[in-house]
Length: 186
Image 1 (cartoon, rainbow, N blue to C red):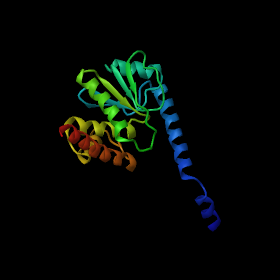
Image 2: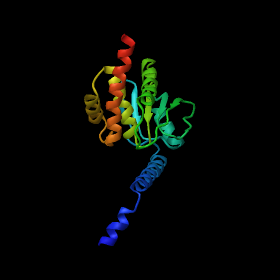
Image 3: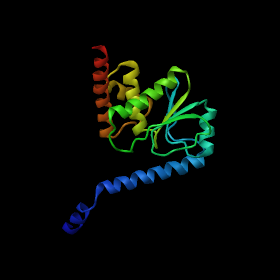
Image 4: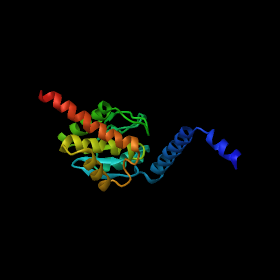
């Protein structure tokens, strides 16, 4: 028993997390190809929609049929959206993001929203990075605090922002945004 325990302790758990994330990405890619639509697709707010990554031409056609005109891609993958306007703001899966990077994504969403363009925000699963950005979007747009933004997000999109680091990023964004807005007033 002791030998097994010492063997387990010698493994790099971050390696296993990376393997798990990669396997999840592959599963979502195959599922999107087979089903012809992205995972976890839903309406979020106004002209904003959210989902997992739309792999393949069928999935892209599916989102176009839903009226999506623009895409905010939070993955590191450069994808073909069949002529749809898109912004890629790469964020590494499972890692914390700086408020300035999150804000770029929030501003992209807000810009499309102001122009009344149906916009899809996606990461790989449509839950972690997507949820983090959409929570921050609620903070930016409606002036609510991080706790209420996360609560609203989770009401609309079950399973979103389950990672503590991403949740902490939402709180950090709220603080950063208050500092930025305070600097503008002075």
